[in-house]
Amino acid sequence: MLAGGQSLIPAMALRLARPAHLVDINGVVGFDRLEPSESGVRIGPCVRHAALGAEAVPGPLGRLLSLARRHIAHAPIRARGTFCGSLANADAASEWCLVAVALGATVTLRSQGRVRQLAMAEFLLGAMTTALEPDELLVEAHLPALPAGTRVGFHEYARRAGDFAEVMALAAYELRDGLVSDPRIALGAVEGRARRLPAAEAALAGQRPHDAAFRRAAEAAAAEITPADDAEDGRLLARAAVARALSAAA
Amino acid sequence: MSDGGCASRSIAVTVNGSVCRAEAPVRLTLSDFLRQTLHLTGTHLGCEHGVCGACTVLVDGRAMRSCLMLAVQADGHQVTTIEGLAAPDGSLHPLQAAFCRHHGLQCGFCTPGLLTTLVEFLKDCPDPTAAEIREAISGNICRCTGYDSIVAATIEAARALRGDGTTP
Image (cartoon, rainbow over all chains, first blue to last red; front, side, top):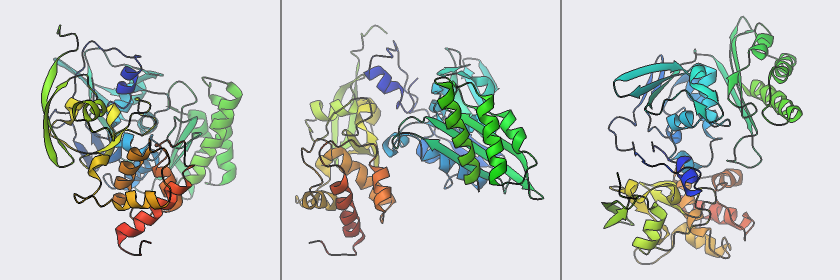
């Protein structure tokens, strides 16, 4: 299945992928639909990276999309590549996989005669591995809205602008009576797949949002992960990225 | 299908303002279509997997990698290549003129991709900082200039395009 083709066409050019058949879905009417609503945003399979930001989606969710989007490759890639394609490709360093997992997105998978919905955490099985069956197409992703007033932060480190990330962290939390409520902390690119970090979230919940609390959450994050490559480097990257995402959250 | 990948489609692409009708093999990239079918060899191919930026063209006004699109996907769309940037009378686009003045090119291999990328960028961001320009061209690899002269040229072209400042 060919949507944006910004991963599949290079894989074909390098002969890493040799599909017997290639179906271009760009001409399918309605596949470029982008529907923001009070409950979140529905994203069709041909919505480009460039279309997802604060100019299209209101509130903290839109701000978070803008923060993540600027790290996705380069502008010409963002103009063509798609959100749903990024989820289906499931690269460990996919910004959209991180956002989708952190927010509890739902994906709709369709084959002939069957439609099913999966939570992102069930869909994303590992690096480049999803629950998509060979006869299924990811026809929609739904990102739930974040409550008004949610603080959002995103930190990514790559050696050059636009490169695949070495680490990326997402932080979102609300404040109730000056204390952190409903924190979401998620990490990408260090483990095989993006995921929320429950120990880091527990360390932050109920705290005042200040540097000491952020550092404790970052320590908890580093302790609870299993880096795919070098463990020491992975924990160092996770600790720094989580702390910076939390500090940046506004 | 048993066509061995040799199937072709009849496509019509508006390239630099002119409608071009041609048979395009379904597996042909847009970049090869521009260079080999239309003989518009100003679009350069470096890496052929989307990394170097040399093949960047404008598709419906947006900068895209022509090596990462199939020619058949451009059917019905508008494509602008480096050959289409100058005015019909041959006078250079302000970015082209500024690149000349500031030595923004040496061998010229990356230049078509840089110019198309920057044409779109300056439309979205007419008064950029040097840092914003560097981020905008981070997907275009130049091995000659060291980029400083490209950034200087872009700042001058932005000023010219805004109409606030005289060009030397």
